[in-house]
Length: 273
Ligand code: ATR
Image (cartoon, rainbow, N blue to C red):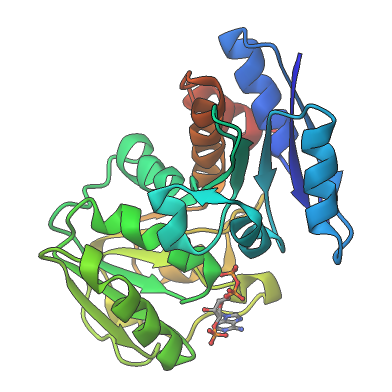
């Protein structure tokens, strides 16, 4: 079997081994996928050892995505812009290559699994950290009418708007604090890590209209804090990031194996765990 793994710290709760083993049995690919906890200060050695042992590909998660990006000698265009990598492999010509499948995972979940149209949509993103940076270019590629990035630290939202100015096309981009947006958006994506602390970004409920689609990049067994707030304030549809997790995994699998697994049975199975 070809060996793959996810590297993070902590890693014991990662769903990636389960997702990839479901992909492997579904596609009949000879893939073995494990989880590796790298020491906080020794990510690089963990990666080198894995590939020296013959490993074929790595997923990278918190807190090593930026280090993975730096370590790689080559980056795909989408990884370059994301500033972080969740997918490493050696290219056919033997170069350690960094890709980033997170943004594709989010866009795929929104559009294919949930039927959300991003083209022409007015989108509000909450947060301006590494997770948000990773998804902006794939969202812009779908041609939204407007993309507003709101963050607690406004300067970080402004920096992202500048960074992606070249990718904006006809999309109107703006940066602001949480308090400023006061009109309904078509799609609102929570990319802050606030919910990890049970916190809510202090955004006005006026951003939620009758048809607003809510997406929290986090997922949990119960409805996330952010999604519950949105539902309480009139949102009709609120999704969590489980689909994004499975879709980014599927995109990594496709990059490594050249085969795109079917995601919906895997999402259903994880949801019922
Ligand atoms: P990640 O990799 O999850 O994106 P990050 O790069 O540290 O992690 O970014 C975390 C994001 O969540 C940032 O947008 C952060 O806001 P700041 O840029 O102002 O720090 C946001 N965030 C974290 N805790 C928050 C809280 N309690 N309330 C609101 N926003 C929060």
